[in-house]
Amino acid sequence: MHTIPPEHEKNVARFDEAAATWEEKPLRVALAAAIVAGLRSHISLQPSMRVLEYGCGTGMISRAISPLVHSVLAMDSSPGMLAVLREKTREEGVANISTVVRDLSREDPTAETFDLIVSGMAMHHIADLETVTDRLFSSLRPGGYLAVADLAPEDGSFHEENSGVAHFGIDPALLLGLFQRHGVRQAASREVHAVLKNGRRYPILLTWCQKNSAEEAGR
Image (cartoon, rainbow, N blue to C red; front, side, top):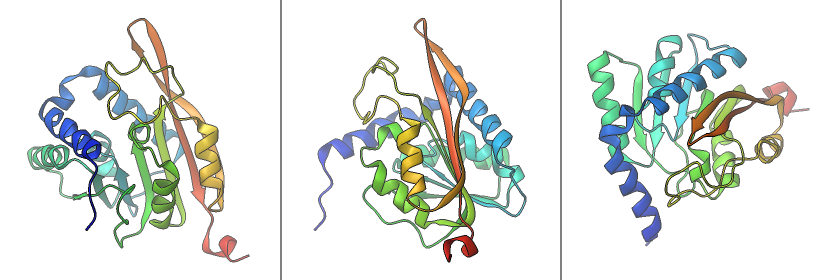
């Protein structure tokens, strides 16, 4: 029988508890909006796209891009976060977002495949970036895009309390290296926002790639 480590349960419980008031902080709302703007400036969102948001939280990114794409699957390890997302989609009349509780560092992905996979401010909570990246790529269609927005490397001062934080920011070179193992093109990283907090500036980087087409993969 698979045993879930107590630390994992604590992390999920922490996000479950925070879910109801998650969007009450203007900093988080502004950050999600900036990530969406950065995403749209580098990747053309199309009405035919099926999108996965991994580590979606209350779905601020999913809800913002849902009018621009065919559908969004919002995935998170926190049932509490997803419950808030479902409530907000009902309130806002959003019909093309579905949810699933899943932790790709511990579980296989769904059988679905996607034209775009996006993750915003989730990867620094994930210890095993290699496994999660591999599983995200397995869900990405040929020619599809993977985009990760997260903190640039920092000294651990961004969070008031670092429980559940696996990385003090994410080195874009590390992400690009993980991407390139799968056969990609147009891999790049750009600053799309900066969080000003306690007199410090914390850059937020969007690191993305396009997976090779089926033809390119077969060469």
